[in-house]
Image (cartoon, rainbow, N blue to C red):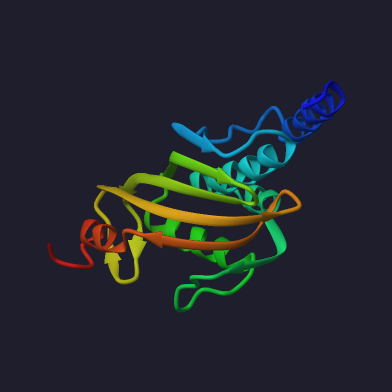
Length: 175
């Protein structure tokens, strides 16, 4: 990489980092594996971290920053709306059951316009899930997500959650 392209990459990275306000606390991955570095990789990483911040906080501002206006959920659960409204709906419903939900990024793998994450969710079931009332029991499950990022925002998402473990912890299924 010549000095000019190195400078441009560093400048682009600084602009991307500056676009997250100082008040933002984005979840940092425990481990990152990347096929390249530079502004494009940084934009992909930032989009994934903003989306993790959305799940970590429930703040829709992070979803707005992370998701492309034409966002498509390729593994859309039954009953969830397509587009950006779907994750907002899911977060609101799940936070009604687990108000202190936290999301951590255990692993992040960056390759071209894709990023794969292993997410770790924890909290306490103190709200309601359907007809089931929580009693503060711990919730601890993992999810795997794959995103395609376009222009610094997630355009497509494929995801798989450990719903069996989650439903057992909520008491919706007997162990």
